[in-house]
Image (cartoon, rainbow, N blue to C red):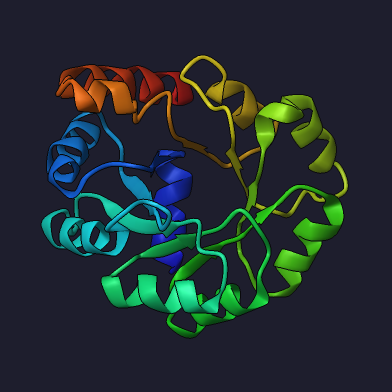
Length: 209
């Protein structure tokens, strides 16, 4: 668990994968890896998500950490862990999800928006909290939260692009989660994986400048 958290803080980016087909997973993961992405989550509301997590965990062991997203409760957590998920991310704070992950020494990243939700997630044992949705409030909201909650590790998610990601890191996030602007379904459907690699490279350059 601590290794995954360290990798997340070091790489600063987790790719959010939603709505792909199983046959698209391998070329997509390869494109992301070539672009410098070290962590990727497959959301559980993706058809065949558990199959994709299991297969990509096996293929990218040591090269990319593979997690599950949209893990809403303990049952979801159990399913994702059996598939081999190395971390669990949710849009909500659910004590069962957090407890299940911690019991298996897997990193839970619950989603929260308000100070009360963030502190609740921390009290349940989450070592990092997903601030979601960020685009509705902007980096200034994150910066204000970090005033009284300076110790909390934040994964900023929602509306991230290569152009605004650095601003959330500067505001106090330790990492960002990025979906559609990086993992473009239109590019995937066209088989244009080189475009995804290029975007990933530009994103990684932006967050490490």
